[in-house]
Amino acid sequence: MARFTVVQEVGAPAGVVWAALVDWPRHGRWAPLTVVRTVTPRPDGVGAKFVARTGVGPLAFDDPMTVTLWQRPTGDGSADEPGRCEVAKSGRVVHGRAWFSVQPLPGSRSRVVWDEDVTVSPRRIMRFAGPLLSAAGRLGFTATLRAFAKDVEQGR
Image (cartoon, rainbow, N blue to C red; front, side, top):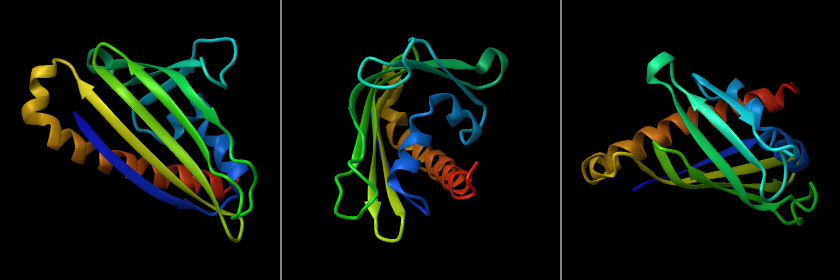
């Protein structure tokens, strides 16, 4: 199993940060070589499904996901409850789960915590590659969340 956590502070209110994070197609702006499309009529809430396609040409793979938990932040103040979204990953290559939370902070800021707990097929490679995949995931998502924060802070 590959497990990692990335934390990023964003200079924007929790409601704005949440709205950007759950705009699934928008993830392609921050994640390199990735295009995301929703596959259910409603893109939000429990049961929503979307697919991230990552890679180039024959080296690309689909990462289908289904939302299993959906709790918006209760407000933008530091005393308000954080938002949390969890997804189940059910692809041929990547399986497991991912989740993020958006914690309101003072001064119209937010903290995003992103966790992944995934397995990659063929599963037998995980015994040896798990630590490497965890490190690569942490590095990749650190860059992705930095790009996300910059995008949101610039009001795009």
